[in-house]
Length: 151
Length: 151
DNA sequence: TATTGTTATACTCTATAACTATA
DNA sequence: TATAGTTATAGAGTATAACAATA
Image 1: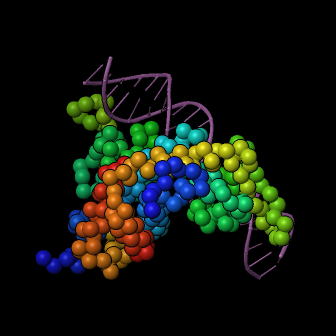
Image 2: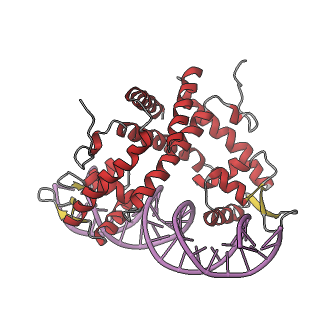
Image 3: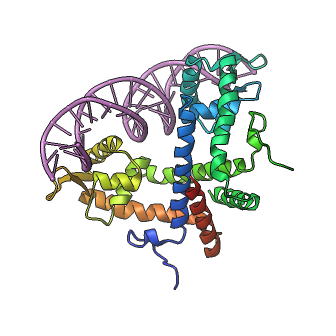
């Protein structure tokens, strides 16, 4: 059967790629919900955990760098960092070379949270991957990379 | 090489499944950003578009049904429906049989938005899938289904 | 002039729980 | 007692744009 040339409200859901998008959304949402349940126990929101886990084992990063890694835009990032600073998990440090930049660094308390929560979160996620072989993981990774590439 | 028995902050990122999760998140985020750019032109947010596209070609649904389809919890859904009602895209209709229930129905304006925007959004998404064969789509779907299943 | 981060505005969504009216 | 939806509360994230300090 030839594919539809025209997409109408009626046949739209029957496009071949639609199940892929539906499953992509569901797979991600299932993961995100499970993931969130983990770091919420540490009192962190998604963006907050993202920042803490990004800053771990580094000498700190500028807002610009954190924004690039986490996909959080600068305006939002100011608020996220404010809340983490309020919790005494990070602090702002003036950059020496470029005085426009601010580096964000984990505090000792932030380091402890990272050292405890990051491995804990990974172990918590790892439990779900017990049934998958190394080959399957590699295939999944490549397929997802392909999907990301088309957007 | 034997896998690590203990997960520490240092070796955590080297777990075999981590690239899969990273790519899952990136693939979804890339899709979500592209998708959002589409329905934002229609003045809709993610949850709002989700509701409109869910109600299209139906005789309406109760809050409970919409919540199950879209994964929006009831408290949040009240607000989302309020905003859609304010835009005159949906209206609340008392259910005849069970007076606790409220059905949400697209208004004529809502229908027009659905008839125009849903196919438009699908066509917009379709452009990105040109390079993929039916077989690849099927494989991707199955793999994502598998991933969803583990969570 | 361009870039970094802050501030302000105005929404939108989220989680949670108490509440109402029905069943 | 249980369920459907509303309301209240308190945050938290988002987009956007104007802004100050610095390069």
